[in-house]
Length: 149
Image 1: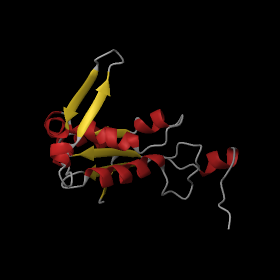
Image 2 (image 1 turned 135 degrees about the vertical axis):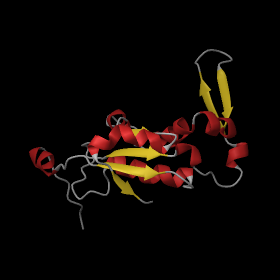
Image 3 (image 1 turned 90 degrees about the vertical axis):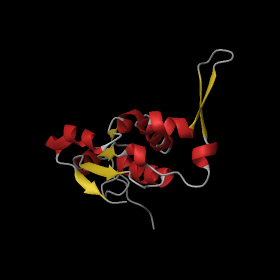
Image 4 (image 1 turned 180 degrees about the vertical axis):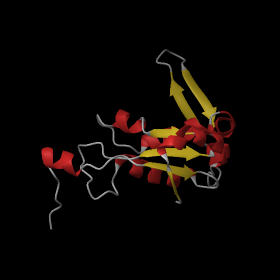
């Protein structure tokens, strides 16, 4: 059985408006949280999903500093970045990153799970991450719906 994919104007007509969702990261495992958030940003669960259109929803993640990592990842995982210059390798352990930039850690996990194509930047703009629940007040006008993962 073949999968139907809408084309052209038909796909634009099927495209639904973007909804707003709130995800609470408290005691959620980092990788599993990231996969579900990435799926919502892509719009894979919508019946009108079209691979070449951005039909995803806006996602607000709160309580980023309370995300959980399994096993010894807190102690052993290291995030790397390179400036491009000789000797420009920077290493930051997950333990320190979790205290200082927990929102960046979740963003990196989610962006790593988005497809590397021209829609990636547009989908990434629909992701908002806050360290605590106070950041949710900024999006009260959009009336975001709570999602349990």
